[in-house]
Amino acid sequence: MQLETYISDLLYRYECVVIPDFGAFLTQAVSAKIDQETNTFYPPNKVVSFNEQLKKNDGLLANYMTDVEKIPYESAVKKIDKRTRELKSYLAQGETIVLKNIGEIALNSEGNINFEPSHSLNYLTEAFGLSQFVSPSVTREVYKEEVETLEEAVPLTITPEKRASTSSATASTSSATKRPYLKYAAVAVIALTLGGFAASKYYVGQIEQHNQMAQEEANKEIDSKIQEATFVIDNPLPSITLNVTKQSGNFHVVAGAFRVEENCDKKLEELRDLGYNARKIGANKYGLHQVVYSSYETRSEAQQALYSIRRNHNRDAWLLVQKLK
Image (cartoon, rainbow, N blue to C red):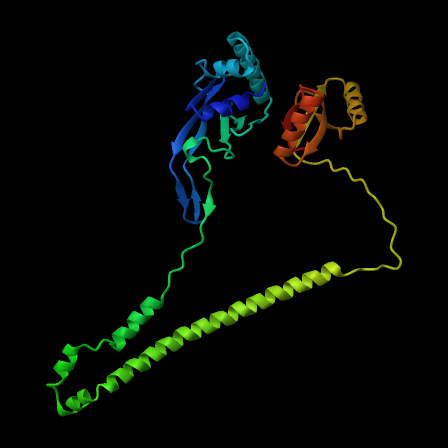
């Protein structure tokens, strides 16, 4: 029974989905947000949390199973109860339960449930189709500030009022007003200076762009030559195939624990005959000799192997997290 599939379906429409005698998954809508350090925009969504205090059966999950599987309500309740006992058993063995598109559940050192939500689905239907994106930083132009600085140093505006005021000045100033073309010439010089500055920056930018395009073309040609190259070895060495089996990692899929070591050896041979990379990892604190299907470096690899083994060979297999000496 894919219980997590039913829970995931209901989280789109309801804010609380209760697994009787286990706990409840809750959703809370949050607004869109921006991560200013990474310039990432996140759409509005629903945050999923877990509350193990809400255990009373409200009938929502059972009724939904009744409609989907076309079974009586009592049968749906029994199925949920069986699945709940399995979840509790896995947690008691120190295993992490992965509920697809919902999150991961595990027991902490105090025996309480820790829940880590999954971010693969957005259960907020109003935000359907929206995804996060990264915006490039905004670069503001500084040319306006440079022009304003130049205008403060050399005013460019010549109005009739200023010409009228200069007519009552000294004789030298009066002589200058008879030749207004000198002021216009000054304006032209400044304009040419600004135009030359802008043209220079444009020209430099064009050169840099041309150089970059030339570099890209050269890189493409080099890659093409490398791909076309043929390497000939007159006396090639014979090939050797080595099958190396790596047995390491702190995540172990346990096949069984035996009081008598001979039974442990029999189980080991049985698993190896079936093609499993089985091995013994020693006795636990209760003196039981443990046999594992294999050991893995990461939890995700071990979880995938565990699901496959439970489905195809042994439903009682479980995950052990332990650093071996």
